[in-house]
Image (tube, rainbow, N blue to C red; front, side, top):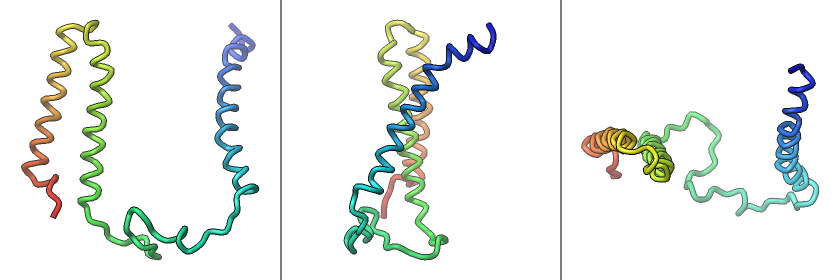
Length: 123
């Protein structure tokens, strides 16, 4: 098991990585040459977020935006754990079921805490 063996084993992986990087980089580079680079005022205006473009990076933004984003990530990850668990529930048996119930109870306690603290209220 020398260096030649490892090189032969990992060559397809390196080729795959190079192809993946190329498939991502080529369209980006092509748009510089093919697409018209002349944005109008509407294209440069602020949209969806509602904030106008500003010079100072130290503009204070309400902490509720961050809190809501963190809560979304937490409960989004919960659903990411539920799907694989539901697929293998018959294989993991009662132990896996009890573990997932404990996980959900901990998340429920966190949700109730956030609700009681008013983190989900938007004034």
